[in-house]
Image (cartoon, rainbow, N blue to C red; front, side, top):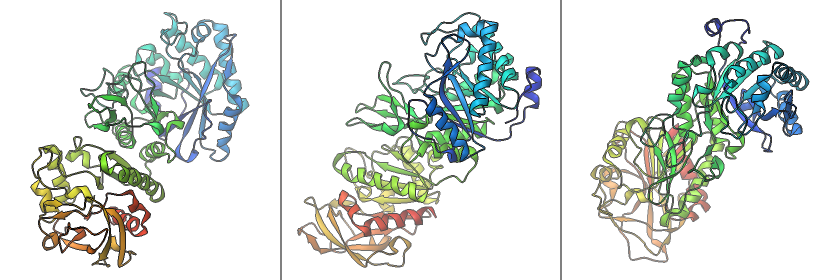
Length: 558
């Protein structure tokens, strides 16, 4: 990062500031034992230090942990480690900053810590100058004194060290035109901007957002005097519920019984809805994080930071998404998985999603789950080279979603893998037949199914097709429903495998004679393959089934 010389005017500093590298910063807390992966970061902000009890120095929470975090620099010398001083409810700032002697002593102690620990700078997180909302003292002079504090810290630590600050989503607490000559960049806390049933970290305004969004916060800070190239957008690795309710780290977010995950395609963030469709938790996932990172790039921002590293899942899904998007690394293929998330196919879906996440980590792709077709538009599908219809019927789709998906398949804008439920074609639950989808599936209409469930022997008909690579010529799949149709799709599709109905165990009277169970429609520009089975979690005990699934993904996104 380029440093700013303290004696320059704000205008001069803004004009000659040179942005060398993008920032990917994580807040790492003193109370966690999770170690950050330095390969996914450019900066670490250790949270927190505080103003000491005598108002003239810095206290550090859990110093052994702080030293452990600083030690990461040995594995990645270019990693920048800063001590973040403050946080919600951290006081004594107002008293310290108002007194010339105390402020000077505090600044010198910042310099001592920088030198003694060999860190790269200081991040000030005073929440918020002039406000006692966090239960701390404040003064009407805090805004002016904050500027003096940043000036004195810059003077004490020198121009070769980083000095940053965390700002609320609104710039009202800080005189940014006066402060910017002393700081390298501003971390925007673009989260906690609302409570369910409103989003807390929406990218754009929608009917589900409060007054502030990421976009409006950025615009407000630019208007207040912060150049876009010195703004770092904040991302939450946690969800936020209603007022008075606890949120949840991303790793722990669950869906209530009968609920679903809904993606607000206007605000560009997801939320957890209860059985009535009401938002109960707003959060970010890989899809919304990627959208925000695109916003960073499109608007010339310096980078992204997040609170906090330990909120991510074990696969480091969000951290990886941020780093790849901001640093310009190769973007991992993004797969959209449609599933209902429960019901009679719930056990299959649960095991399937566990398997997919493991595959994603192993092979290097990203997954987004979608439990209703409402968000699907042409624009939405642009991010996905592959759609997996894992446990999702060809009805309940809004007209816009149907049109977008039709365009996606007919014009080869991506690939598709479908299972089982995708050929539940007919008039169901008050919805009409989707004729295009029936044609896509070979002109079939659902007729019946083996309700008692049966094992069946699948016979490969096209061993050369990439989806069938390494699959046994015959193999048994257990406990499936084996749909039947009014006609065989064979005349309109390329059949890759069929089931031998004489092998059903137990036997069943529900049969259709010629019974394809794996096929592809070569008339469509999109690569596509349909697997009729997909009812039982026991499928994942079959090496042939998992090989088919893995082959299909590889073929679809190659």
